[in-house]
Image 1 (spheres, rainbow, N blue to C red):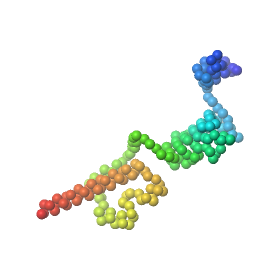
Image 2: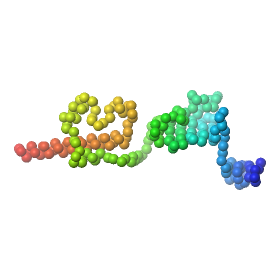
Image 3: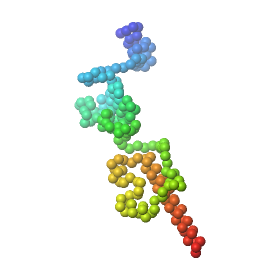
Image 4: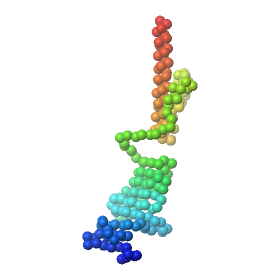
Length: 200
């Protein structure tokens, strides 16, 4: 089986080469692989294991599916997308559909994540609290706000967090702002205590 001098040679060791005459593995392919699947021709490369999973590269997205051994392969109700990456570089893990909404995020995970270290690069931190022109809210104002809204000023409410999720970068910046404000309140109180001691 030859075309232009290079076809599908086999060796005495049972190795098969496609696009090369010296296969160095059981199957060695030196040219592209293309498969047409479905009613509408679409270039795709598929590797599947009936009882465990499926790898599909249909041209604009990279998909890895987990499947379960059944009489039909693979029924939608028993198939779950393990990971997908689209042509914009967006990665989704643990989703139920390959073309689901990535929500504008480069990485979307439907499940828990564990890591030893996470570094988040940010453009602005909360040290503006220590600027001379920063307005430190009066504690009476803060108290009135809490009584009315049931959360700290400048901090998202529970309802907002449930609706939009927790932005780790923004929340850490807000928490640092509150820590720095508390520090300024304590310093102010200490000065007042020192003044009272001096008067006495």
